[in-house]
Image 1 (cartoon, one colour):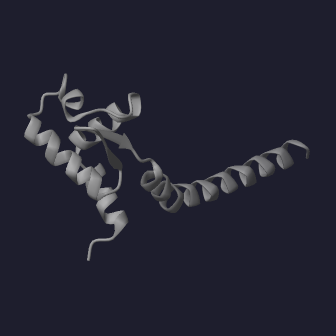
Image 2 (cartoon, one colour):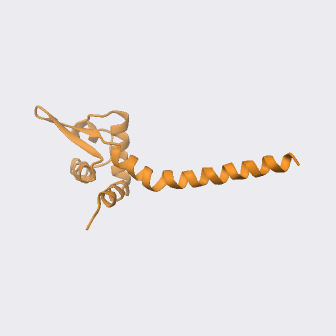
Image 3 (cartoon, rainbow, N blue to C red):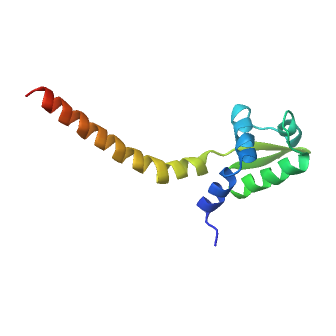
Length: 109
């Protein structure tokens, strides 16, 4: 059974999908046609990547009339960062603080 995190990691594993996320980060709310501009991917490939990003909840499509706009949803990435990166960052910072305290203690002797 594939979890939400699995879907996010799978979606982020492809450089084409990361490029699409970067494009949406630069300019949110783009149509398929806008996203296809200046890419070396077919329209079909972009559509397939967008579907994968939607399944991972990394983008949210919103219809405006007949146009489908794609918006970046940063929450799944934030949740992954919270779970997989920040907890390790805290430990690293604690070790650096201890090292600094030890070095300051050595310099006062």
